[in-house]
Image (cartoon, rainbow, N blue to C red; front, side, top):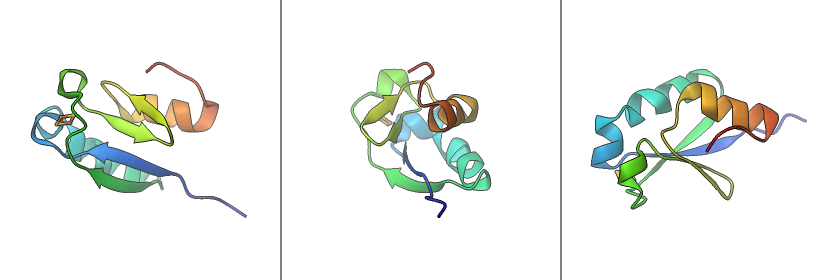
Length: 75
Ligand code: FES
């Protein structure tokens, strides 16, 4: 059975300015389920992605994919 990954992408104003919406579309295109999050109060590090109990600062699709596939990567 293939378990789909659910990724939370901040859709707050700062993260939108820094590519959060585009990032959400890229992650959906890669087959991930994307949940739109309100501001996470981490605007300095935007865009913000939450994956399980982890927060990925200055997220890119490569960094998110690296965490999903490898379980590690930079935060
Ligand atoms: S707008 Fe994304 S953390 Fe504030």
